[in-house]
Length: 364
Image (tube, rainbow, N blue to C red):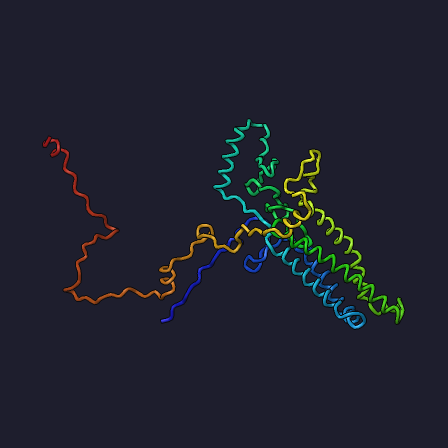
């Protein structure tokens, strides 16, 4: 007799996570929902490099050096690897408070602030935290129901609080935070070098071809090269400028969010408590420091109570799979038939007759 095995449906935590993120590969890939500009980034990089490897690289490898396509391939692969690592990873999303935790935090806030009279605005929900002998304010997030850690902020696009939030970058299709900032910086740095490299050798290619057939004939014969030069020219300024800006931030151990808000350069002239006062130390901490693990546990299994449905037990599963057969009966003769002493449900037992009223009074 064959036995069928039923696998219980497992509910992963990423399926129930709040926020506006999309997940692929069973929770291994995490991105924002708006991915249109990310696909444009892939198209520009892949398209430009494909044209460069297909036309200019072969000519330059023969005329100048075979190391030109090799170095271009290394830059291309490194740029793509850091781009995908930035786009597909958890930037440092902070889990939201559970209902019990949120209720406890609300009780703490009410106990601290006291009852607020009706019509008055409640005081801001802020906690003071000391870092390097300097007071830093921890703000309360009304969406996630938590006091955000230092340097964390809530992304309005992904609807999540991100640790050491830098900014939301639509070009990589993800937030940039504590867990993927170094990969983002390496991506824009390698992309700047790749853009300069392709642009420069496109100019060299046009110059070499122009010496043989003329400049106008070269432009007519190589429309792909003209397209590459235009893409690289307009991309160069923005990518190189962005790399320079983030190099400045890394040297100061500062984020884009803090720079825009003027957290350490405002009217108060508060000193950055996270800076070591040394460019090398700041760069080592931001780019080479230990990478914290993700606290989301995206691929963890939810308990049965939280998954929304209780899978059947082993006995229920086996009994539902086996064919239902009528219960066996034994053939009894008339002498062996048991007496049926049960009373039918339709006929209630007879009630005893009430004694007459005269007899009752006589007894009294």
